[in-house]
Length: 154
Image (tube, rainbow, N blue to C red; front, top):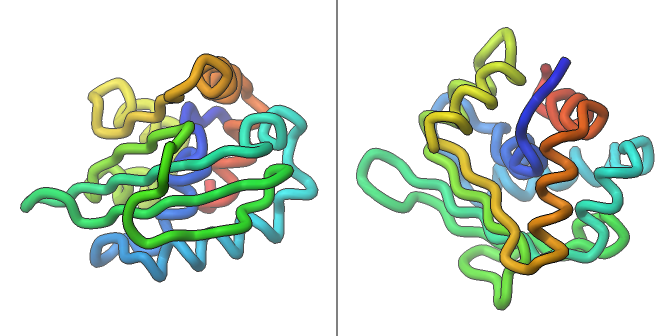
């Protein structure tokens, strides 16, 4: 199955643990635990993508911003989860709560992710040249996308 999501494909996978009531910081923490348990079996492109990065997650609801969190990775393992902004992020993940719910609840999370991404409801961007290249590679990799889809039950 293909899922054009990076981290949030990884991050969306992380944030996707609370489909019914919006995403809370505790959901991000729980999703990080799930991600870290499976990272050893992740495709090499995932390990390269999330090797040593600082990921800023921004989720918005109907009334504006609803969650701001940061993740720091070392050798693809999330070593720090911060509520609020993270200094100098290398990857930005922006999503709406509605898009996360659509991906999480869909029988085809890959298709739902792609649709949300195409509509601009999910955005994953690198802030450095190397992060931009990593994001592009991950979003083009079917093995990485399957790994992320599997994290959210796809």
